[in-house]
Image (cartoon, helix red, strand yellow):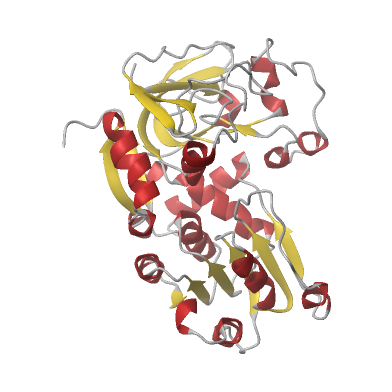
Length: 381
């Protein structure tokens, strides 16, 4: 079949001779891919990797028995084409999206893996699978991903969508929306509360939509890039350009109702200035959420910025199946405007063109793009 394979740092290769994935357990499901989004994690794997993939090209993923030369892709929608004999919640023809984390709950599928038989970590025993000690992802080393024609996953990761309410292209955005939904839910956000979003990349914009889905009051988005800032405005956020301000902290605090800081802040940029801003822009008892993925580097903070007004600082990691289900429900019930979601799609390309017109386009022109979708079914354009 067709697919985009990972060979290492700055080495991704399209092939029309990728091995067909097969069911390896009676609880497995095969899915024909309709659309797959290119994620920032895919770009990091290309530019700075291997990160999630084994550092040794001959090594194996710590949960599965796979190594290199797998297809990337973990933001996708599709149709079930085959099910194992013990699958009970799905049938052939179901339209679906996939929660693509992997960890302790997936070890049963890989008896030849390095850590097969290892007992479940504390997070997984407590149902917090997104915080698994061995966290990994389909399309990033666990197993072959959805920048391909077909994938195979365990039933417990597959979530049905009503294709009459959520088209396949919108379905491919449920994964990044679930990341944002998890962040807002984890923060303890209550209907009518206000929030500041720092950064208007794909996840920052998804946070704006997730906040709307939670019934937010005032939403402000701070973003220096004109195109991305405008995009946040079209989604309904008030916008702020930190480059136009002599004192961005005080100016942002003043934009919150009451003028003394926000109840919630979400750092989707992952640079030192936005991390400290996420704390300093809070009002009393506010909650700062780090949703960005950082490299292994420290950030200077002043503990009294947190202590004096009893602020809270937390971090979030990806999602659980519950976040997918709640995101889907919010879209189907109109709490998240489907046309606003569609505005995040800034390009659609063929699988054959996914390196040049997908990966490299996002690397070289990230300020002009939000989400590029790839389809193995798309014809010549």
